[in-house]
Length: 398
Ligand SMILES: Nc1ncnc2c1ncn2[C@@H]1O[C@H](COP(=O)(O)OP(=O)(O)OP(=O)(O)O)[C@@H](O)[C@H]1O
Ligand SMILES: [Mg+2]
Image (cartoon, rainbow, N blue to C red; front, side, top):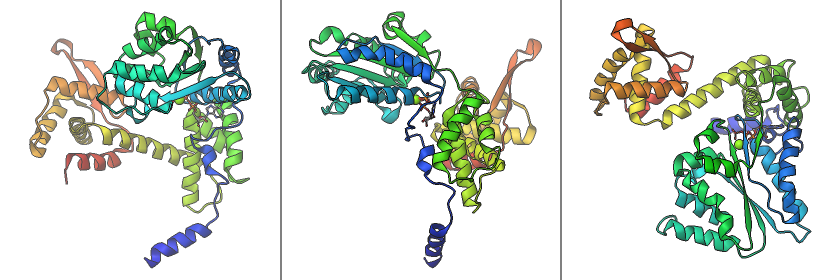
C-alpha cells in the first residue's frame, strides 16, 4: 500500500512534458484545418444551398485513412448549423459512424440508430424493418426542414447490412412531404464505390470529392500546430517532428498516425523521466503502436485463426521459410492437443492468406513447376514474443 502511495505521490510531483495531451488525441478538434482548404471550399459550396432551404446534392467523399475527411465534414456541418440558428431555416446534420458500436450490422439496427439520434427510441429488435422506417420518417417529417445525413465509414454499412439500405435511404425523399434529406457518404476504402450497384452509385455520387494523402511537409506543418499547444516549450528535440512526419508519410500521408506517434513518443519520454522527446522515442513509439495494433488484431481473431497463426510462428521459428504443408502438420497436432476440430488444409491455406492480408505473416505463392504451387510462409517483425503470449492465452496453452 505504502509503496503505491509513494509512487503516486512522486508521479504527481514529476515534471510533465505536456501542456495539454488531449490536443494530440483524436477527439480534439483543431481551430484551423491546414492543407484542406480546397476540399473545405468544395464541400461548403455543395452544402450552401441548404441555407436557402434548397436541397444540396448528395455527396460521396473518399480518401485514405487519416486524410481529414471526418474532421472537415464535422467542421463544416457545425458551422452550417451555427449560421442557420438565428434564421428561419431549419437544418439538421445527423452524423453516424457506421463502424462504431456495431450500429450498422443490420438494416434494422441502423435505422433504429437514426431514430435514436433524432431522440426516438425504438426497441432493439422485434418490429418489422418497415415499421422502423416509418417511425424515422414520421419523426423527421413533422417539420419543414433539411436533414444532412452523414454516413461516415459507409463501406461498413454496405458490407454488413447490404446495399439495399443505401438504396432505401436514397429514395426516402419520395416518401417525405415537408422534410428533405441529402446524404453524405464517407469512405476510406477507395474501391468501395466501384463495387456497389450502379444505380446507388449514381445517386450517392451526384458529387464526389477526393481527399488526397498529405505529403511529409504538410504533416510537419499539421504536427507543429498541434505540438505547440500539446507540449511545453522546448520539449521536442530537433528532428522529432520531421521524423514523425516522415514515418507517417511512408505509406501514405496519414495525419492520425503522425499525431499518435508524437503522443506515444511523448508518453515514453515522460515515463523515462526525461524533459525532452528525442528522435529515438519516435522509433520506440512506432514499435509500440505496431505491437499494440497486432495484439489487438490477434486478440479478436477466432480461435482457429489463432491456432493457424500459432502454428506458423512456431514452425517458422524452427525452420525459417516454410510451406503450408509444414504449418498444417503442426496445426493438426495442436488441434488435437487443445481439443478443437482441425480445418481442412485448403481452408488453413485461406486462413494463411487472410493473416497475410492483415500483415501478421507473409505468404508468397511460389511455383514448384510440375508439382504445382505452394505458399512460402515467413513471419517477421520483432513483435512475435508479445503475440505468442496473447496466442497462448487465447488457445489455453501453458
Ligand atoms: N489538416 C489537418 N489539420 C489538423 N489536424 C488534422 C488535419 N487532417 C487530419 N487531422 C487530424 O488527424 C486525425 C485524423 O483525421 P480524420 O479523423 O479526419 O481522418 P479521416 O480521413 O476521417 O480518417 P479515416 O478514414 O480513418 O476515418 C484527427 O485527429 C484530425 O484531427
Ligand atoms: Mg474518419
